[in-house]
Length: 179
Image (tube, rainbow, N blue to C red; front, side, top):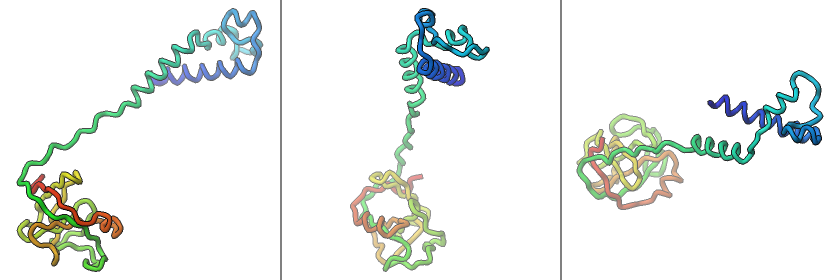
């Protein structure tokens, strides 16, 4: 079906090109084909007649409809909201190599830090705890600790210091043990 549309569009473009290059005569206009076509098997009068589009508005409407069908994107499915215990935390951000964090990039659990995944949590939350932050629509994994991380405080790892500073300090709701 797509190949047929491509051929039809190519034929239309060829017809329009030929019509602009060769002036029409009364005889050719009556048939709906461009006149003064070269007398070769490629440009016979019957071929030119078959390439003309009788209703250009109809062809344009059909092209718009086809474009609308291909432009429609499938609906993005949102993940179901995770179930678990809800708590409020003060949330900050950190990065490797800032004034407070060593530059080695290894968390307290032994894993490497990863943007969008690593979270420093208080000791009351065991390593591996999944923490969903609805305000950010993202789930983090508790893999790090920190001297400044007390009860009621979470610290998100970010790759860039600029991003971490822009994040600042926020009060957020969190869903714990979100899988």
